[in-house]
Image (cartoon, rainbow, N blue to C red; front, side):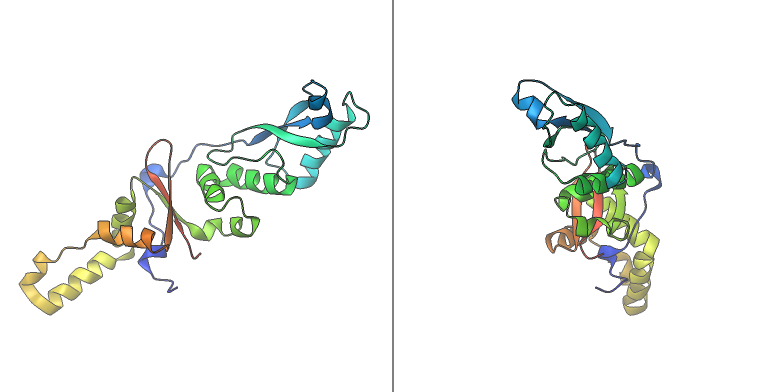
Length: 202
């Protein structure tokens, strides 16, 4: 896709640049203990390297009531925003998503959820993220202004039709809707209101 395609250009919103910090954690428990009617586990920092999270798992299993305990699961989680780790997710998967959330905030959680935590997609977050806005129309309006597209269109209209240019209207609402319907952008709704916009072709 053309790098200047307005549907995949970033448009910033200064009022929404500061996202709340998230600190992803998982409660990892021993299945052997659970099956025996006990809860044995601990909260672990998930935004770490896989090896560190694996060491935490080993420490939990080593203190199990069952000396043969070797199976574990993610029984609970916190600080993952809109992303939902599964109880049997791979540790590499969980740690990668958690590190992205800790670094980029809730928008990364929404991006991970949109792609079902596909690790091959997560590294493209920075290029895909088009900003946080009050609505898709607000994003389209911001792009029009920041990219110079509105000015260019108005100048071209003035050159072509003169005074009739005052009647030229840019339908940003339809344009934003077409970008979403065509799959050029993905939209995730913020719990507090507003949307995150992502390019589908970063």
